[in-house]
Image (cartoon, rainbow, N blue to C red; front, side, top):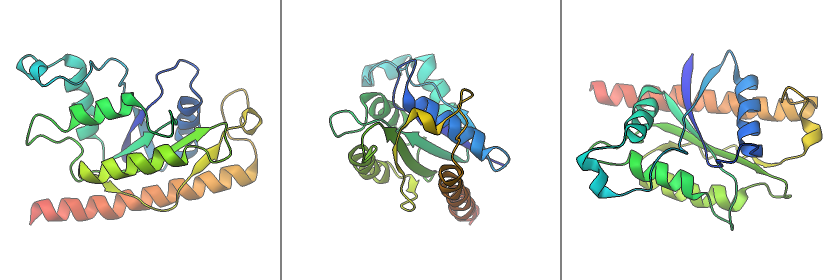
Length: 190
């Protein structure tokens, strides 16, 4: 089973994006192994800190590098993705020549109470993820409008049509990881 490093852009304890990501992890069980990567303990990016790199940065880089793929779960702050995700991405690209994101199959998802979910944030994040050399899944997209009644007390997705929709996305992501991860492995071996 492929492992997925999951970075949730909201650091809030009761984050709906964290709950959404945990619900996806439950749905993906048996197909993908979601491993949540802590990014709230990363200091703001500062090149000077590489002289004695923070342990939180080294841990994050190791966890991302050990995974087969990366899932970015972003809320929308002022029509943009969060500073926490940007900070993690910046740390992951350094030091020069040690880009943790390079060639990693990736996807972006998120939720918001609003009708268009996190569409603007996801689109801006997708632009950055191609620059840092992830292999980004373009379709299907999920702009999920969060409604508490879609989840039970254990954070399981309740309505069958919602489960089916999200399961289709998970299947496509698993297939994307298999196809692009295999191509990446073959290219490194050649």
